[in-house]
Amino acid sequence: MLKGISLHGLCLALLVFGSTAASAQKTSFKFDFGSGKVAKGYTGVTAKNIYSEEKGYGFDPATPVTDVNRGGKDLLKSDFVTSEKPFYFSVDVPEGNYKVTVTLGDKISKTATTVKAESRRLMLENIQTKTGEFVTKTFIVNIKDRKIDASRTVGLKPRELTKLDWDNKLTLEFGLQPALNAIEITKVEDQITVFLAGNSTVVNQNEEPWASWGQMIPRFFKPGVAIANHAESGLSLGSFIGSRRLDKILSVIKPGDYVFVEFGHNDEKEKGPNDGPYKSYSERLRVFAKEVKQKGAQLVILTPTARRSFKEGVMTNSHGDYPDAAKKVALEENVPLIDLTTQTTAMYEALGEEGSKKAFVIYPELNLNDNTHFNTYGAYQIAKIVAEGIKANKLKLADYMVEMPAFDPKKPDAFQSFNWPPSPASSMVKPDGN
Image (tube, rainbow, N blue to C red; front, side, top):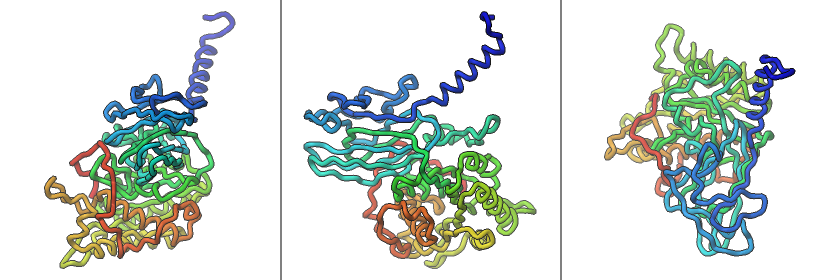
């Protein structure tokens, strides 16, 4: 025993010290990229800085970059990193919302940059600079962890254990023809957080060619709103609640936040005596409404996205009474509704029986024929439908949306006009659920 300190006191002191050290994890960073001199107040990062736990930041070794140094007095813009393929840069951070500002551009060349965060969340789309032009762009990234309280954690599926969404890092992916000069990252407490609860049509799909509207919707918001996607493939309302995902949301939600909930695809498969659209499905939606309201937040109910189900050139309803049940609960609980079933049905019919295949993971050459799960083009179009639903419901969120033309699902964007740089990770394995 140390003089004057009991063993109990020493253990308590160590626990307090450990807790204090954990809570003091750094939450603000300024990185200057390239092999030239480092700008004052920034941490220099070259292509050799591979991520390590000891350092807490760096590039993914599987996605190498190249240093470029143009020289000049402006140290921040005189050098950069680039690559002909998408690359990842990660920083260790605790849970929360982070304001990320990137500086992009090159003295002697044009550049184009698409930025994704974590598991392929679209943050910036095809940001172009002319020769000698530099731009700074700011967006918000939500970082989450499994912890709910001292005794409970979210029950993750095995496939989630390796997802970038659930690790202890903020990971950014840069694609197209980027020239990355600098990144600033700062934790912020003043954002409206939009929590997404849903299934495989909402989740951040980790691998190409799969995608969902939940990972596209961040692209349509300016700073002021953070998107926290808690959806997961294969879940129903019951399994979402049962895996403590609603508890997780309720543990961090604050007054003025939102919860967007879209289920139905997997709820339809539950055949117990108390299951069905007007039984367990409706009751669980009411649980969401009650719990979210008690936290001073706003629930938004979305009917399930339609499956691609044509008969003689006309879409059929594969969801039965589930969309109607969602509408009834929204009316009873006096919460906003976005009718994705009707809107996506209209979009598929506008594209046509053959043309609508371009919105789904239907690639015969890869032996993929999925009429439920979207590719990146389809997910992007549905995110636009959700954005229009936000405007139509006059939600405060609309004040933070980027300027964009009104979107009519009966006149979707041309498939040929959509430009998505594929991420490195890909899989032919179909996500859970249908």
